[in-house]
Image (cartoon, rainbow, N blue to C red):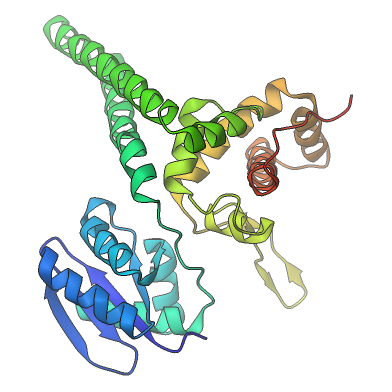
Length: 310
């Protein structure tokens, strides 16, 4: 159990920091106050626990990393489940901070591995590319649902602009990765695995920097691909995934779908599961977990993917 835990609720303009069984403090979301907080947390050797909140938590992360403070960025759904488990139903910033402090003290939360400044700078465009892809997907859906000719032309023009922007980001990210020999080698190694292309590789490097540094169970749990038991008494419930980081999970699901179609080893694995009664979705999720464990082992050993003997 950590000696000292600070729960932090992140808002747009401030953070609420709550020491477990200690003082609470509201801190402005400004560089100087955040630096002071981060230095104090590092000096106290505290574990700082906060929810992943998109871009709002970025200044806090930057301050903690600059100070060398240890932090854990948890899935909001996992935090809500923990709050319900300990009987907390209220929803307020300081209540949330207190729950996060308690969560950090009671659970064995793995510290988040920060991206190095150089890697962060080179991979900075990956989240924006995902946003653009999401916008294009929405516009493609609207195009299918719209009959008005004028509106369809407007939507089509927007899709073309988004496609151009996506291609520009992909080219820029590829150039930045190629300019960093270490990063380029990791990217190349990941792409030797079936189903993994440049987009999946960069997404994993950005959203799962712990890849290659954890054991197979830890990395599966971090990506939300570890099966969770739902047993009670003599009843044995079906296992299902829960929690974890949604972006790497989605990337791995798509990669596993491709790997189970075109790689003999992964295809045989998926077919065995389906023959044993697993649904298609369950089989693909299990394949995604197998692919993730394989990628983790590859980076840990510094080896390329070796196809299964046929």
